[in-house]
Length: 139
Image (tube, rainbow, N blue to C red; front, side, top):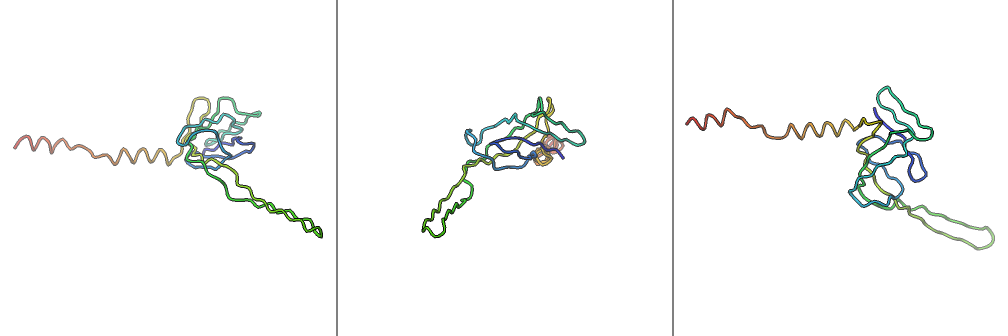
């Protein structure tokens, strides 16, 4: 299993290829590719790479799926015996990011699902039967 720990929006996040994550809003348009270079840790099969603070030559590639707002967080302030109450809400702007690949020193790690989807697309293409064409020409 391949994963990486990245830093974005002041938070650290464990990401895997082929999954999507909600992170703080990025100033990138929808359906555009994003490369995140602040990779703290990469694990692939038995090998690991630890950064101090970042791993040299490591990056995470992703696609912005959409921008949305997170659920509302209510902030309620009350001072007892003073008849003061404040009720405020906040919704954080977030970006849904699909992780496409993890790069480490030129080697690219993608998800098994993405590789299997590519192989099934190739398998779904109709094969041309050359024997049927030659039989039609013979008649």
